[in-house]
Image (cartoon, rainbow, N blue to C red; front, top):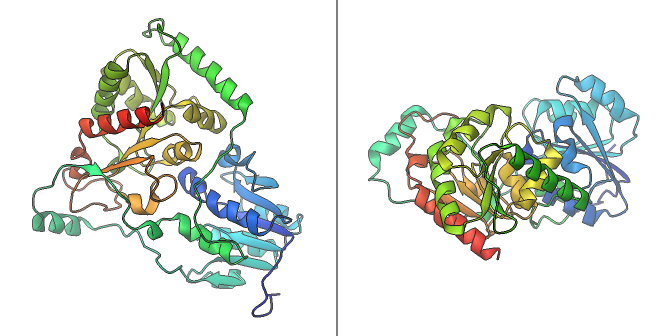
Length: 389
């Protein structure tokens, strides 16, 4: 059943099928906020992978959160959805599985982006929004051709986000506009309780005490600063570890009493350990030790986060922490942190002609990242600290 032409739906029970990656999930929060504004009386449930559940437990735009495990089948998910008697499904990922889940659940209204071979699963398959920008991966030959045609790269600079309408945030807003929501962007927003912040402060103190190389802190409570040197997508997004360490050393020298928290997943422990070895004795390694709720709170406690383009970058911006980000293979116009154009975040790029290439590994000499020097990030981190005073 579909709504008559010209008549806008006013659903009472809405299922939002969430996206599966941390950074993408944070970028959907403006759409959820706009949906709540448009339909304040609706009951909105988010379906998400269980690894992201902590992200949503206290979000004011939602009434309920349903989770599914990594190995759970669409049929199993659909059986649980069917029992909830949803009237409308808003499918945020453009994936066949997501559309299949809501079709199997027999939800009457199913809104999502059109995709060849899957449109029959939706009652309202939407074409891409005006201004949609794709992220095509450059071929190795194209990368080499652009290098041959280019002049020598110029020094790196802080990126100004030239095309704010290209950002991925707008893709999710366009979907919610189908249900009457305002498509104007908002800053991504995540909620953290006072209790979570207190627990995070205790965790930091314990971790610092257990780090045998950390001397007793003097001069009051140290300033907390964050490092996030990993990136799941691949090495093309990772600024060199020695550059992170150089920034930590120089910023520590300039501001004095500070502690760096090195974040990441279990696979990032080695790079965090290398940074700690090179940076000195005020780096606390938290890679692989922080559940998502604690990561959110710890990032909130940091004055600034120096990070690659990855999920914690978006989380930090959404809890109000300024971020400094070297961008290489990816585009800040498409996936930059926070509200597009927000000048509290500093996005560093080089003038490599092949960037962004959207490749997982660099086929040449990694010039997009090596062209961003530690001194550029040092200035950006110090500026973020000074603006927070």
